[in-house]
Length: 271
Image 1 (cartoon, rainbow, N blue to C red):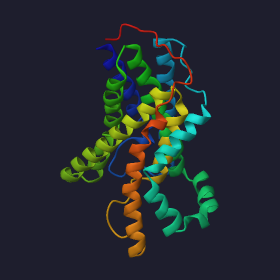
Image 2 (image 1 turned 180 degrees about the vertical axis):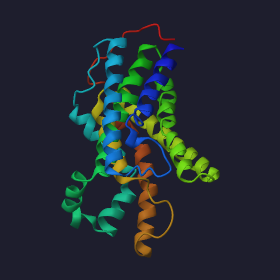
Image 3 (image 1 turned 180 degrees about the horizontal axis):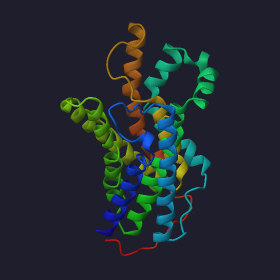
């Protein structure tokens, strides 16, 4: 039971921190893309994830160092994640020819608060809290690998439900839309959490899951219907989209790493 309480506590710390500063608190006129709101929330979640890291170290001891950088495993994780985006990468680089504006986009990202939130601070703070803190706590409680992969990410999905409250403040009567948004967001964040939890358990390093998270956020959800460029390009896109899913499945083994560090969690009475 204690492992659940601690995990819920860490989740609560993270979510509540978003509303620490008055400028970031929910209200009908709140614009979550306002640079002041983004700055306040980025500071809050970094502090929250730092607190969770300190508490985790106090609970399970200093035996795990999540800040090592296993280069080979990072590259393989990114390559594996990229396979499912073969279609979207084709759309961006071939159909839209975004490569021509790569350096302009890169410069814009470095000076854009939304990009910093979505690609750097958000993934970093979430992976620290939900992978580097909650997962080792579950390991220390003696949970099986399968249980950790499928249960722990439910908290990651739940942590996004607060968006529903903000949505209803802006659109008070849109209950059906809010419910659909909640179900969709909870579903894809939980499924994504399964994957990044698998990566973390295979490496016990922050960086594979963080960089994969950042990459996936930068790509966004793939286009699942509609026209992509001309007719031939549309056919190629959807073929590559299906092929990417197949390759992702067939190459799953490249993410079954032998842990680059020997982590023996100090079993503590958390159950």
